[in-house]
Structure formats: C-alpha cells, structure tokens
Length: 499
Ligand SMILES: *Cc1c(COP(=O)(O)O)cnc(C)c1O
Image (tube, rainbow, N blue to C red; front, side, top):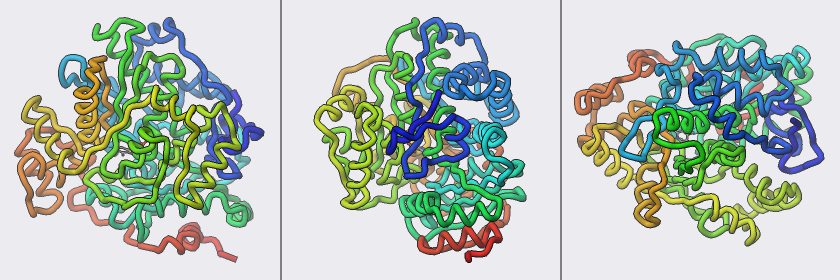
C-alpha cells in the first residue's frame, strides 16, 4: 500500500516513509491510496482474540511494507499489561442498556493518546530502520495537554530519537502541566509557549515545512518527525480500538455480526473520530459518527452548514484538549470525500490560511451530513452531565467524555435513534480533578492534590497510580517562549547553531 499527500496526489511513499516523515513536503497529510476492507469473517475471527492480535490484524492492512513479525512485535511491545492497567487494554463499561463507554485511558498517562503513542515509537523505529539512514529523529510536538505527556512517555530514552514538546502556557490543566514538566528521560525537553494550542500547532507546522530548517538539521545528522495526529502512525493505531469495541460487544452478546452501532467521539483535532471513519470505511458496521465539541464548536457548525470558519472567539473550557479551532485531520476527510481531489483540498486550505474559512461544495456537504451528526456542549452542561451520570450510575466521567455524553443525550432525544452506541472516553477524571470535583461536590479552593483527595472521598473512584505518583515531584522544565522564538528554542534544545 502506498500513501499519497492530501495536497499532491502525485506524491507516493511507503508507510515507513509516511511515518518517519510525518508530513508531506508541500504541507499535505499522508493518506492511504485506498482504504483496505475488513470482511465479516475477519472481524468474527478476532472476537476471541486479545487486543494485541486485533491490533496486528488492523495494522497489517495498512503497514504493508512491515513484515508480519514486525507488526506483531510492535503491537506486543506497546499493549502490555504493565503499561495498560486493564487486561482488555480498551475495556467497555456499560452505562445503560445499549450505551457503552469505551475507556481509552488505562495507559501510562491516563488519556487516550497512549493508545497510539505507546506504539508509535515502535512503528517509528522499524520505519526509520527502513528509511532514515542513521539520522537522529527529532520528534517535535505541539500539544493541547495530553499528546505531549503521552509522546514524552512513549519516546523517552528511545534510541536515536529526541523529543521536544511545546504546550500553551495557560491552556493545559495543572495535572497535565505537572505530568509534562516532571518528565524523566535523557532525550526529552518541554517548553511552554505564550499563546493557545493553535499557535503552538501552527508554529510547529511552520518549522516542519521550512526547507532551510530541514537543511540545517540534516547538516547535523538529524531529521524531524511528528508525533501529532497529523502523523499517519498516530492515526492507524486508533482504528484498532473501534474494531476491538465491536468485537467486545459481539463477545458479550450485545450485538450480532453486522448489527450497526453509532460512535460518539469528543473531538478536537478530528483525529480520533477520523479513525472511526476509517473503521467504518473498512467495513465495521458503524451507522452514525457523532462529533461532540465543547464551546469551541467550529466542527459542529461545519458539519451543520458546510462552512468551516475559525474566525470566532476562542474559549478556554474545562475540556482543554478540545480547545481547538483548526482541526488538522479534517483535511484527510475532505480529501477522501472530494474523490481524492488534491487541488480542491489545496484551495480550501489556502482559504483557511488567508481568510480563516472555507466552504465545501454542496455535494460534499451532503455526504458529510449523511455520515456525521454533531453537537456541542458548554462548561455548565458538562458539569451537570458529570454530576447526573455520577448520581444515576455511580460512574465518574472526565470533562471531555462528559461533553460526548451530553451531545449523545441531545442526539438521542432529537432523533429517537436508539442504535447501540459506543462513546469514546478519552481521559481519566483525575486528570481534570478541579472541574470534575466542582461538578460533583461544588467549588473548592484546595491545591491540585487536595482536590484529588477530595474527589476520591466524594466518589470512591480509584486514583490511577501514574497520577498519584506525581505528588511532590519538582518540575525539570520551566522554560517559556514566544511563538516567534520557537525556531530558536528548537536549536537551543538540540544544541545546534542557528547559522
Ligand atoms: C486529544 C484529546 C481529545 C481530542 O481528540 P482529537 O483526536 O484531537 O479529536 C479529546 N479528549 C482528550 C482527553 C484528549 O486528550
């Protein structure tokens, strides 16, 4: 299988190249030349298999330049019992009849980013072995909070690799910040930037696509790659858990093979829900893809109107990993739904860059409406949802998952659609203790770990060990820089001369 660029269909690279390179030279994203399919028999054959085998089955369809042994090795090293505190890796929790919460946060950093970032370093190592001729790979990350920590944890002390993470100074939760700034490992660095996530992301993207910077790195025996969800190696592992959740439902008799499900995804950069779209295109019986946004409802409006318009107020919300106005992975969907029309994608992305908006053709908008439903939810409703679900079901949601649950409630009420539904749960509630505690038992002025204690007292829900162990740790990384100084910061952190 070859990979093309969303901005130049003429670009054709192997999976290994797509993964080491991260982004195509002209700024497009790598996409498979055709979406492989999964037959009913293939899905049924995975029902009694562990997660690692489900993973290998999905990955081997896309990573055709990897050997079967390489794929299996990557999956086995990533999805272990030591790293994921759940035997099924991505377990389902039945909220009520026909409503399943897909818990994606049992990995080392307690957010769903681990599902991809625990395996990406292994995919990268194998890919680099095939393509990177001994260069040191520099992983450059812009994070809205969870990617940064998950990438640091995944790549720490990985051979021939260094990782630099930029996060918005005031755009992450105290727990997220502490997770990143206390990161251990010899090959890691973390820096705050003055700005929001979109500033961090566009800064990183600009560095990535600047040929002069690439040349400078090359002279120093280095090359950039990306651990953001623009990297195909981030996206493909996310397809696995949708397939796996369907297998789990078959296994417990909640479905018969072929029965449709709906999937609800709390969305920011459009990566997680795009993986569900790929699963659907592969043949997984998904009926509706329900896209849930917080007050930054740029995607809700886009799906409803066909106009993507980022010219709006940016809201800092209690679900910070979704505080995003430029959803990068949407580009892959546009490419697919336009019939792989790279010129159309270029025009839309140019418009986004110059005017902050673009409109999709009516025909494409119709397709989007058929595939997707969308809704949004403000902080007040998010808090109400956390409280209600806890009171009704004794189950504690984090803020992002609560957005998804609220949007699902609205969807179900307005459509009457009772198709069995999988709701992606993207973080453990203790990552956002302040907002979750406030929702459950009212505001409290205590420090971050007192909040953790109070939340435990109020709910009896277990505090995950990786978060509990941060208590009392001293930050290693305290640097802050301006958006304009990111390039220099990269040179400083890599100890290379700017000239
Ligand atoms: C990253 C993240 C999201 C958004 O996922 P996208 O793939 O960017 O849409 C939602 N919730 C949490 C907790 C996250 O970390």
